[in-house]
Image (cartoon, rainbow, N blue to C red; front, side, top):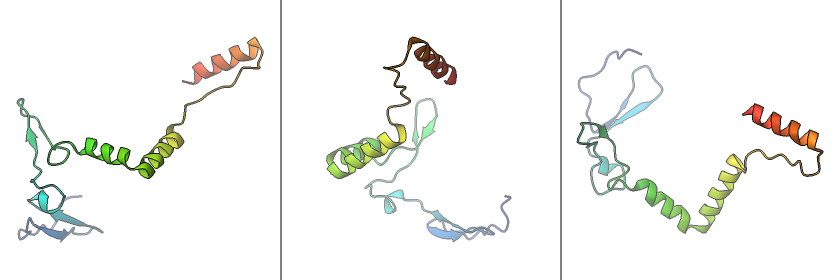
Length: 114
């Protein structure tokens, strides 16, 4: 969609309606006013000039979230349940009581499928 009728009077610390869209956009210069970090989160520039956005003010957000999940018994149990439901133990064929011919067929079919 081409930008149309973009107002030059947009305040970059405001919520603006997007023209011809069912949505809004938030413009803010100081991220510490939105997130629960004490510092403004800005892109970090590496020595080769590459920029990236840090994970939180101290770049430790994923690790902090994992710590909080592990400390909460209910949340960690629910997280484990979700992981088992989504991923489980993978496909398993129970061929203990099958003949050698059937086992070979299962094995061949299994390896041909993946």
